[in-house]
Image 1 (tube, rainbow, N blue to C red):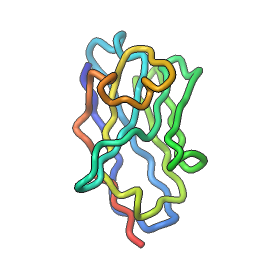
Image 2: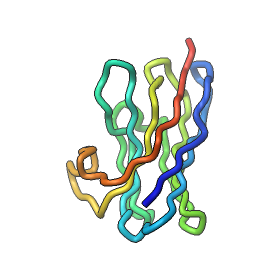
Image 3: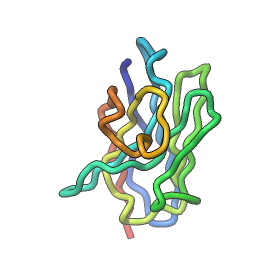
Length: 125
């Protein structure tokens, strides 16, 4: 599975941004698509995820009610809609693919076997 993330950029606090992640290759193994982010000097952290079926989405508490993960199965693309952005959302955002996940596995980056290259999101105050 190859993942290509795009859509990052520089925005002001309160603005919105939408990231995209397009999958190619053996996508049958990518039942779960997740978004993670890594700020300078910090560990990579879970942001949100969705099953390709679209039946389940999971979010980190820090982005709940501001970020939305969705997917377009026909385009093999997953989106991360980010609203009401804050300076603390500044990070490199990565998309990742993994098998069907349950419970706390959603948040565990080691469960995701495929990663995109990352896209920078910078939120100025």
